[in-house]
Image (cartoon, rainbow, N blue to C red):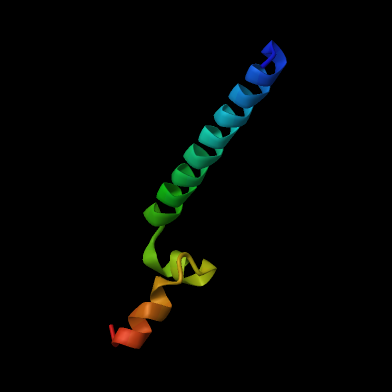
Length: 55
């Protein structure tokens, strides 16, 4: 295993962590929006589940 392989693997790992953190940040931001705006943009499709349950 060369130094370049280790570096490439490390960059790949850091990239995955960054992607996961960005997804979590986006979910938090969207969940902080008022319910009517979340419904308008379809985030998430929990509104379909509510309709099925009758809420």
